[in-house]
Image (tube, rainbow, N blue to C red; front, side, top):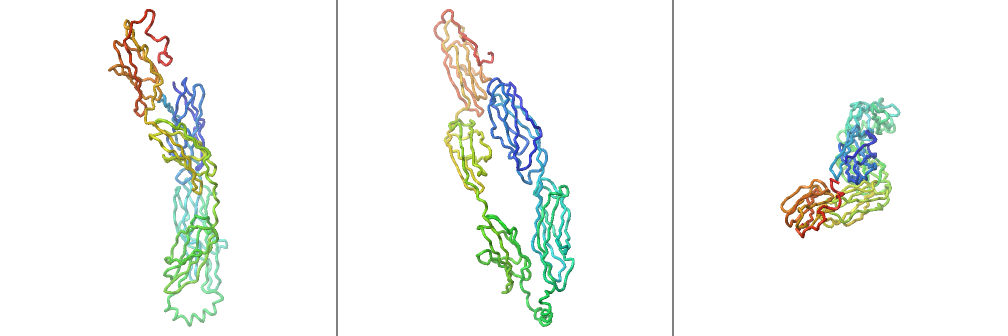
Amino acid sequence: MSFGVRIDDKVIQTEPGASVPVAVEIEPGSDSMERLELSVEGVAAEWTAIPVPTFDAAPGAKHVERFFFKPPRSAETHAGTYPFLVRIRSLDTGEAKTVQGALEVKPFYHLSVDAVPRKAVIKGGSKSTSVELTVMNLGNCSQAIQLYASDEDELLAFDLENEHLNLEPGQQKSLSLKISGRKSALLASPRLLPCTITARSIEQPSNGGSAQLHVEQRALIAPAHAATAAVVAILATAWVAMMPKAPEITGFSAGPQNLLEGEQTLISWTTEHAGAVEIKIGEGDFLRFPPTGNFNWKASESGDVRVTVRALREGRISDESILYLNVKEPERAGLPVIERFEITPTEVKVGQTIQVTYQFSDSVESAELSPIGLKLDPRANGVQLVVQVPGETEWKILARNKDNVLAEQSILITAEDSSLATIEKFEIFPEVIPLNSDGRITVSWRLTKAERAELVIGEEVVEIHTVSGRWEDNIVMDTQITLIAYDVNGKAVEEMKLVTIGNAMPLGESSEPEGPDPDSPNG
C-alpha cells in the first residue's frame, strides 16, 4: 500500500557554518512493518547529514525522521536559494515518494585589507612614497567597495589607484596607494604619522575592513646637524661624490607581531644602496637575504623574539633595525574521549546494513571510521552502513581534538558472502500423493529481501513475483520441487522438497490444506 511524505517548512533558512534540522513526516500506508530509505537530492552532498538513512516504519502511526543542512562558512558557499528534493523509498516494494523544498543560504560579509610595507618613508627632498594594497572579499556575496585613506593629523595627501572595487566572493585585488606630504620642510625632525586604510561595502556600510601603517616624513636636514652639515657639505662634496653610498634599511616590518605558537608572520624589508641584508631571529645566526624581500617565519616557542636586520654593501654595514615579536602559547584542548562505540550486528552477510553507534567528548573536533575512511559528525550519534567486504574485518573509530591528539577503538565484524534473501516458509501439501487422487498439490512460500524468485517443478521453471503466496499444480510422478530466491546482488538461496506418489487416499480425506494460507495473495 502507498505511503505519504511531507515536510513542514518548504523553505529552510540557514547561515553558512550553521546546522539546521529538517523534519520529514511519513504516514505509512501498509498494515505491516515497512523498511524505508531517506535520501536528499539537489544540493552538494557535503552540505547534508543524514544520521539514519534507512529505518523501519510501524503501521498505523506517523513516523518522523530528521536530516541536517550544514553549508560551510566559506566564500565558496554563495548566498542564494537552492532547491532540493527529499526522496523516501520502500526497500520492501521499491515504491518511492518525493517532496520538494528550498534551502535559502543567507549572506555573510567579511572584508580584509592589507598594506605592504607597513612602514613607508617620505625622505627629505622626495615628495611622495607608495605602498601596495590588497583588498579581499572573504564573504559569500558580491561586494561593491569604497576605499578611503586618512591620517590623524591630516598632514598627508593620498592618491588611490582606484577608489571603487567590485569583488566576487573569494576574490582579491591589488592596487597602488601614493602618499605625499602636504608640507615639506628643509630643516625639521623626522615625524612618524599613523595612517588608516579602510574598505567599506557600499550596500552594507557596517561591513568593512581596515589596515594600519606608518609613514615617516623626513626633512632634508635635521636641526642638530644643520650647522655642521653646511660646513661638512662644502668640504666633503668632492669626496662624497667619489665614494659609494652607504647601505640603508628603509623599511622593516612584521605582521602580525602578536601570534601563537605554530602561527606564521610575514617579515618584510626594503633597502637602498645595499647588495644584501642579514637577518637574525632570536638567538640564532645572521642569515643572508636579497636587499629587498620578505619571508614567512613560523613561531615554535612562546616568549618575546627579537628580530634584527642590517644592510650590507662592499664591506659596509648599516645600522641595525630591530623589532620584537610576541609569541604566546595556544590554549590546549582536552584529550579526545570515545565515550561509546558499538556496532550491531557483528555477524552479518555481505550487503547487509549495520548500525554504528558512537558518542564523543566535547573535545573531539574530527572523527573517522576505518577501514572505509568515512568522516563522522562528532555531534551526531550514529550512522547506518552496508557491509561490502566478506570475511573478518577490524572496524576502527579514530577521534582527534584540535591539537590532533588521537583516540581510537576497534570492533571485529564477520561478514558472510551469501545471499541476503531468506526463505522463511516453504511448504508443499501433500508431500505424498495418494494413488487414487488427481495429483493436485499446493506450494506455499514466504520470502524476505528477495528481488525475484523461481519455482523449479521437475524441468518446469515458474517465475514468482510476490514475496509470499502459493501455487497449485498436478503431479503424476515423483517430482523434485525447488524454491530459489535471489537478492539485490543476484545471489541465490534455495530449498528443495520431494513429492512422491504414495498409497491410495483413505475415503473422507481431502488433498487440499485444511484452511487458507494467511500469506497467500488470495487470503
